[in-house]
Image (cartoon, rainbow, N blue to C red; front, side):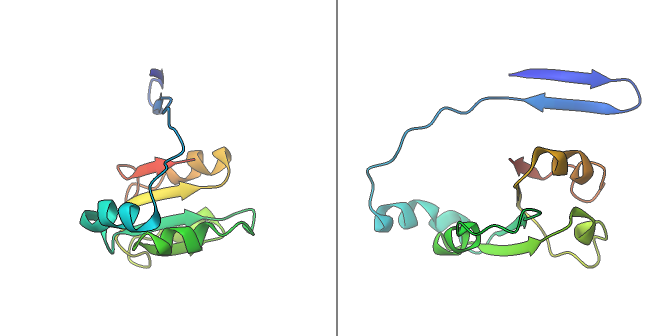
Length: 109
């Protein structure tokens, strides 16, 4: 884990997560996801995903909220409560971090 910080601009935290492919079947995975059921995942899809990210989010029992432009979620009154943000391009992270309503939400790229 490391941090880059600039006075008056904020800090960026970087970390690496190691993972392995699970041999669990879908039923086991869904039972593990049960405590998180119906949480809302914001997927900022600037590249117009064709790989099924939204379908995977929904298969896990989560609500997917899709925005094709990060500015679509700048106004917290027009955006639902977001539990986690998934972005398809690291450039989107800089934009999202500027929105005070989303600055403390977990973000995955």
